[in-house]
Image 1 (cartoon, rainbow, N blue to C red):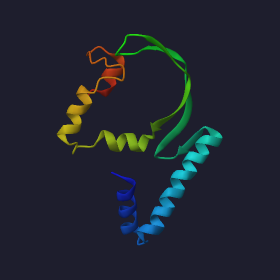
Image 2: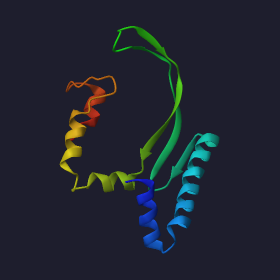
Image 3: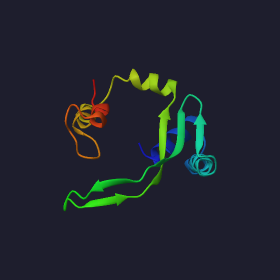
Image 4: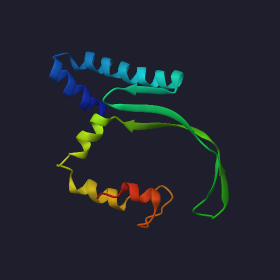
Length: 126
C-alpha cells in the first residue's frame, strides 16, 4: 500500500478531500520524523515504538573482490510493533502465497540462506 492509497482510504472514511487528507497524513509523518530527530524515540500506543539506534562500525567484505572494507557506524531507525499490532498480525489468515515463499527464501543481508542461520531463521514462516 502506498501513501496515496492510505490518503484515499482515510479521505473516504472521514469525508475530507484527498488534498486535505494528504496534508494531514504528511504532517503526521513529518511529526514522527521530527520527534525521532529531536528525542530519538517515539511511542505510539497500540501501534509501536520507533527508535533511533546507532549501528557500530564493523568490518565487511566486498563480495566481488573479496577485499575487506571498513563500514562506518551509522544511525538507523528501528521499529518494534505494539502488542495490539502483533496480535492482529499473528492472527492474519489471508497472506498471499507469493509473500510466504519470499519470506522463506529471503535469507539475510549477508547472503546466508542456511537453515541454521540466526538472522535467516527469523524470516522463515512457521
